[in-house]
Length: 86
Length: 415
Image (cartoon, rainbow over all chains, first blue to last red; front, side, top):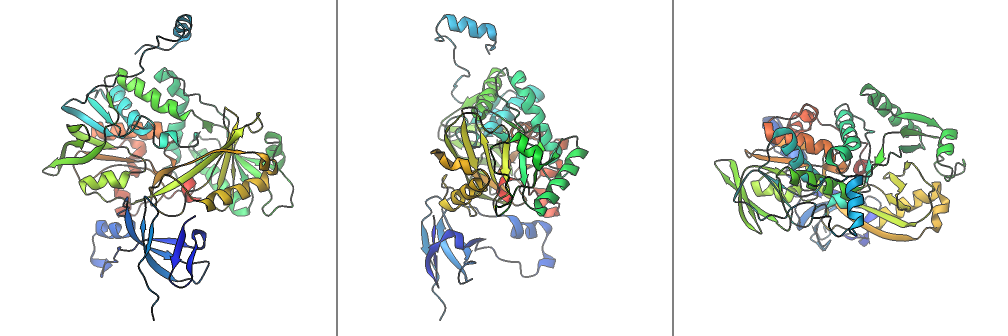
């Protein structure tokens, strides 16, 4: 059982959350000017690293906050990187 | 290759089974090959076999970082089936079933194909609708997929609880008679032995650490056993697709997720068919030839390379299994494990060229074992001819840019 550090709720069980994918993904500023390949790269391709990845998580069965964590996909070690906004 | 037969069995029995000989050589890598396959599982070994058998390319090396079939080929739940949703999936998986049913003879190696059939329980109107849609698509391609009444399901599977009192009572089922169980290790060993006999070099304990390129084309691979040159390179690594593809700077539309399975102690025969229960993730169970009840479910819902899973999946699968099979609550758990799957965005396999000339990829996706022979055959075709096999034309990487995805709900990861 992963324990995900929600900035609002603290450590909670993984099944209260949905993993929202890699956080470094940037939506192109003007999608109409992108090539199909660049748009597909944004939509579908992942770095999918074996190691540390910064990703979005959604506390869907809790406070419903979206936040980011650093997670090691090999060791499952998790580092919180976000403080609750004031 | 020494052929296996009733006579070779008798001959070796007389000498106490001490003189069987090795099933394949363990050569040192040559300096150069026409084709290098990265990954010595079912897909890689199968591709090497079909390259040699159907395309006459025998100067081939299969590089495996561990031992043959030690990855997902040895970690799946042995089920092969073709009950899928899309017109691009069904014929591909049908070809795989056809090949599985004839490969024991072609390879002269017993894959222990056991045609049990698969029954998916219908426990909701949504499941009923999907089953009918699949059945119609499959009938177009000559694949039998038959709706069963509750009485027919009870006749085939006497041990489940048909009472209407549970949360999602079983209303009926849908049945694929040709679905089978296949001895998974034998698939790797059978392909390895037959490929080796045709001259393919199988090199174990040889990890690929980099890919050499010149002018946008591959020239070889760096490995833990030195540089090996090759004109064409085929990647068939389950669970490490992004890692190896990044060696040529290729990003892939996949994430790597763990898929867990676990087995009980062996018991006497009680469950003939492979059974799918429509829980939240889709739970499947079957009884192995050894008598163990094998249980599995969908992937853990986040990326991981850890080759182990976490508890919510086990809990959910056990809950839904015990609701329908309450007597299995007395079974003791023997083993539990996980494999890592490279799940493409649409759930279907990727058999494709890449932006780097001479670098080809076979991403097995979430149904890697059931597609093994078809993927191997079409991957060998792609590597040999530089254009896709007719049944894998729609499975290229270009489908993501064109938007023509092969969206599959019928895979364990997407349920």
